[in-house]
Length: 58
Image 1: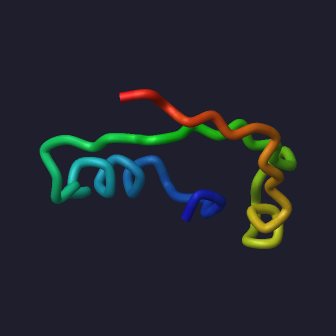
Image 2: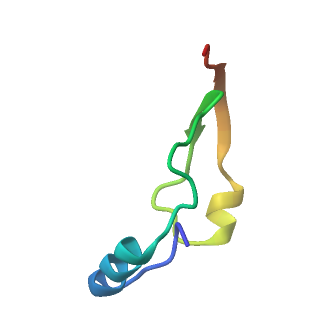
């Protein structure tokens, strides 16, 4: 749904109803991603390119 155009009311409803089943989330790496602008379709998402990956130290 990253490229889906949603009415602002729908966006707000989804944001308030979204339940993440964890109290904490941990990440072990970060990535720099190059994306086409704007992202409007699944094809655009498939064009994303990873520029860099960094492991995180805990």
